[in-house]
Length: 123
Image (cartoon, rainbow, N blue to C red; front, top):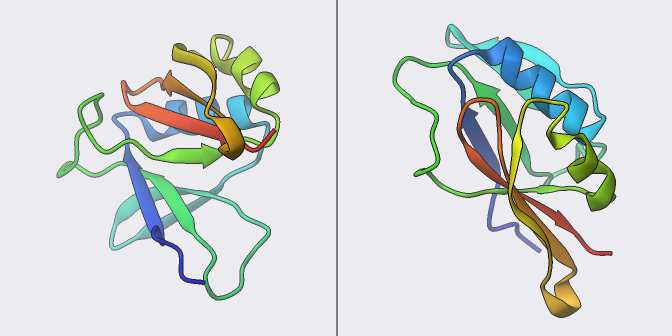
């Protein structure tokens, strides 16, 4: 099955601050890279096979962070734990954990850069 999403980028004004936020909230280490001279901090995944979805924080003068951009949802298997770390990481919960029926639960947070980012959990 082909994924509807194959890559995403979350713009940042301060990539180190943004990386610290996501690493703390998700309790996961991220990998730093540079592509075409643009700093990236990659979300890691255990699935490296064909069809795996990847994404990164980017610091590019052509892209500005903010709440009016595309809303993506990150996998958050333990949504309650992620939400409990948002404020300590410097973010804000803008939509609390919400039941979406058979598809699980979602929440939306504002990161340290002003981006709105969704979190999704099946349980």
